Amino acid sequence: MAAALQDYRFPPVKPDELPNINIEISRLTPAKPFDYQTSNDLLKGLRPGVDGVVLRYGGRRATFLPQVWEKIPDPSTFLSHLCQKMGAAPDLWLHKKLDVLIYQVEEFHE
Image (tube, rainbow, N blue to C red; front, side, top):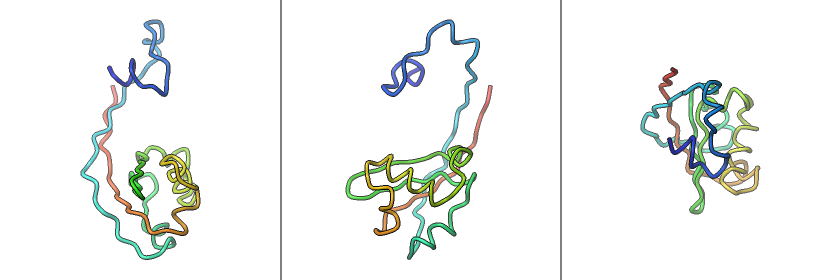
């Protein structure tokens, strides 16, 4: 309900839109720290389409669900967009060691 009516990023769903809406629920597994040494290790270790990713740095945090890989399949671009989402420079992941956590989802569709 909150996602449909109270998400500040989107206008509330209107009753006449309901027939065109499909509901999907993602149950997230617990996020686990992803240990890496270099940005190349990070790129090689992520599993596109499988891993959801959380980036944390300096009090900032952002996540992309695994479904985002469908729109951003390149790991480098994926990480750059995720840095931007957390309000940082897109190339931060190349220059700083970030806290990275990964998780997976179980999807439920109506």
